[in-house]
Amino acid sequence: MSEAALEEISVLSAIYCDPGECQVLSSTESGITVMIQTNVRRIAESEIRLRLVFDLPVTYPSCLPNLSVSSEELTRAQCKELRDKLLDQAREHLSEPMIHDLVLWTQQNFNSVIGNSIRDEKHLLSAVTDDGTWTTLLHLDHMRAKNKYVKTVEKWTSDLKLTGKLMFMGKMILILLQGDRSNIREYLVLQKTCKVDVDSSGKKCKERMISVLCEIKLPPGHKRFPEFEVKEYSAIGELESEFNMAGLSTLYTEFVRGLF
Image (cartoon, rainbow, N blue to C red; front, side, top):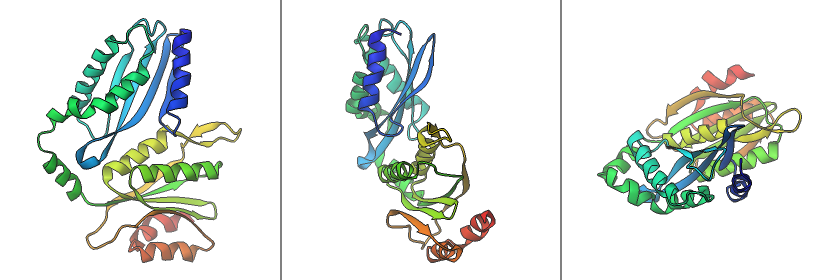
């Protein structure tokens, strides 16, 4: 890789420094693949999470990067439309570092590019609202870098407007999430793709021991948790009472009790 390309990747890591924002997916003799995750505002001020993957050949920036765009909230056609526009922009930056400029252009021009392909925003927003509140229960095997891990989880849930609890009971670790189903799924993507913990040698690592115990739609009449909080329990009865008071006793009986 050219010095300019390597320096650009170093700068990108400094700019997009939040967990999961900038990741080097692969680095080989044929080039480097970098993923940038960014939020853009869309319907009724809601945020859409975009994943922009730049495959940089060894001759970059003298040649164009290979580009891919993905998002849980967009159709394939919309992702392709945005990718084509980004390639047009990339041609204007040929022979110079361009990734940061392309990400900024995406944030600034997303609505004008994608807006015409969404015919009825009110109908779409209604469909999202009608989907209701979902509850997902996760089980973590361990948490070595506890302080950093907890802060990361708190940031993700805040960014995605999720409520619930991170629960510690002895060696058991549970995460109960409530919110829009698409946001919960985005959380799971972050949980599985970002380096949130450390391994036995102290090196940063991804979460490979997470289990999704259940995913259910919150029944009518049940109120979701008002916020996301971290709690520690000294006795099994305290944990069970937490589920009972939230009207989630069935979840405890079917998915948690057997873990002890």
